[in-house]
Image (tube, rainbow, N blue to C red; front, side, top):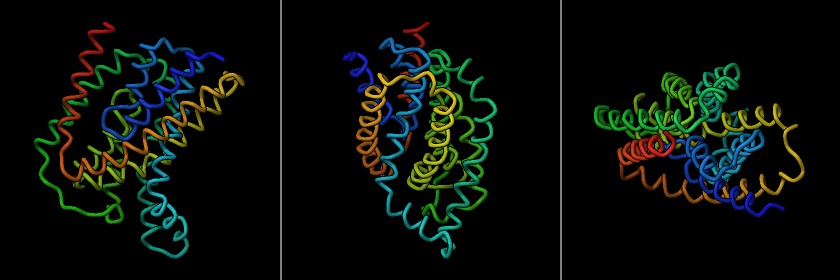
Length: 265
C-alpha cells in the first residue's frame, strides 16, 4: 500500500469538495494540485473525475427533501414536472458538447497554463457581471422560466474548458438571466447532479480498464474526503451568498491564475 498516494488522494478529495460548488473551478484546482503533488497518468485523470461523485453525493444529502419531492411528484405535480424540465433544458447543451469534444478538451486544455488563463479571464468576467448587472428579484428555483434555464445551460458549456468553473459559469449565467444570487447558486447545485454524474460515468466507462484493484483504496479515500468537505462548503456557501456578492471570488481567481502562470511558466 502506497501511503503517499493515499495522502495525495486525501488532499485532492478535500480540494475537490471545497471547490466543486464555488465559482473557482474544481477541475482547475485539481489539475494544479495534482501537478504540484506529482500525481499524474491515465488513472489519475479518472480519479479526478470519479471523486466528483463524492461532492455530488453531498448535494443529494443536503437537498434530499427537494430531490425526493421532485421524484415522487413527477406523475402528478406540475411543480415537480416543470422543475425537472428546467434541469433537462439546462443539461442538454453541455452534455452534447461534452460528448463530442470531451477527448479533445482533455488532450489540449488539461494543463496548468490553460487553467491559469481561464481562471484569470473568468475572474474578470465575474467582477464585471457583479459591477454592471442590476439587482435581481428574489425567486425560488421552481419559479425559473425555460428561457432562463436555457441561458444557464448555454453558459455551462463554457465550463467544459478547465479553469472556467462549472459552478461559476452556471451561477453567472443565472445572474445574467435575471436570477438572484441564492437562486442561481441553488439551481447550479441541482444542475450539477445530472451533468457530473453523466460525465463521471461516461469517463469511467471509457477508462475503467486503466484501473487496478490497488486503486480502490485511493479512489475510496478521495471520494469520502470530497463528500465531507463538499457537505461543509455547501452549507457555508449558501449562507455566504445570502449576504455577499461574488467579487471576492473574482479577485481570488485572478490571484491564483497569475500565481499559477508564474509557477509553471
